[in-house]
Image 1 (cartoon, rainbow, N blue to C red):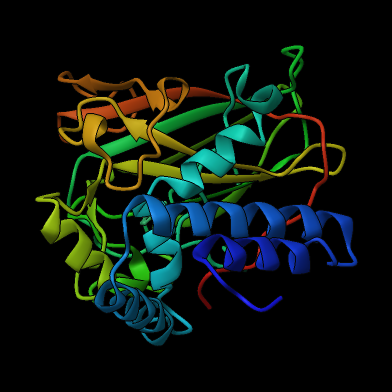
Image 2 (tube, protein in one colour):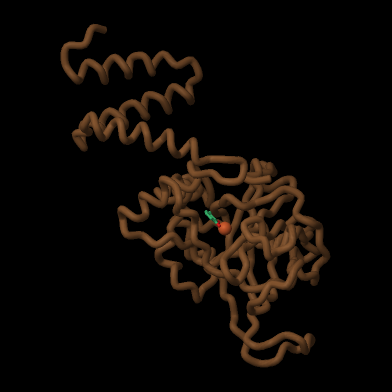
Length: 297
Ligand code: MBD
Ligand code: FE
């Protein structure tokens, strides 16, 4: 089509998108073209702004490495990962779900552990936390023999791979549920975590006067054939950033009750008060047991 007016561009792009061979890709490309063209019209995008947008997308790519993904961070900072998660789980957003964001710090080969073990592998100052978790199916029946891969930041807010003072795989470990669907272990209480702000995402946060914090959380990746692999996080209920998570990940169902204990620990005399305990129930949904691509090595 030889273009005579702006509407002609949109019409001829849509016509081309309609020729996409794969039906799902066709649906996506037609809708994407419609929204992108509509967006440019609605905000009256200028030529300078269009060039800036292109440079920004290129920067997102350039700032992404084997150990850092600026694109994923931006998706989270725009709430896209949270939205995609909720629309694809818990009966398409109609029911509560334990599913949540994977985040950028899951690693392969987290060490296998026995129930009762500690995942503190090098001196990590901070309040002791005992976690007792149960994995159930939608009917409430225990899921036995599930692999529960746990990882979290330290009490000062760094993941092991970002912090030279922590041993390799500190605050990471994989447990197996017993016949009652339970795993239990000892660790330290995680702290809120500031996402990196030295890239494009940092510029966005600065422009909007946003803090870079995620509320403190404990990650779990739960795997058992016959269930959809459960990517979950349990947020700390006394965290000041629960309402303003920079990645929009906090749901009601995932705020855990981290109970603060002032008295001595019943069995371990070496544990200083306050220490914490967390009891939490994860619910697995039917679906495919498939591990994600590790975001880092
Ligand atoms: C994190 O620790 C995290 O869990 C997510 C989802 C995004 C950035 C950092
Ligand atoms: Fe995290």
